[in-house]
Length: 218
Image (cartoon, rainbow, N blue to C red):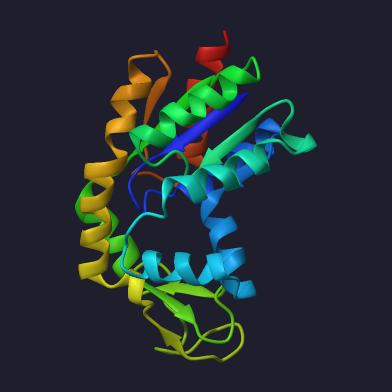
């Protein structure tokens, strides 16, 4: 299946994308992961992307599209993929349709993860990240460390990333409503959208998404 996962920041797209991709045996293609890889490597692209993401903005369409198309062309995506973080606006959505159409393919489904805005702010602004290892993450409400401000795993200092601050989160949400949310209606006109209530335990949300995909495949 060829699937697009959409939803506001903090809706759990990364978590659900990884779980769904594993269950469906298709690659999880995250433009965010591709961006972060360039940032870690210190490439020119990475430096450009880092400054944009820090302010909660969107990476230029031509950069995002080129990266996504290159990844979708790899052999492991021949029988399907799950896109997370792309497309982010109408222009990218139309470009994706064009690319797939040229290859004689089309999307099978667009899963829209629905989460109240106040919950999004609470989820993101409450995150704390380890300075030693960014994969060590905690939350002031949902996953508190044993010692305040100290990573349980390695003892590193926990801090709030710039892009997790409430004012940045609010800006990211405004960008999402203006730029990304319209693609839901664009794909709904094609009969592709399934809205998934995502204010629930992770496994419950995954079950709802798989059920929606099964209905579409029936």
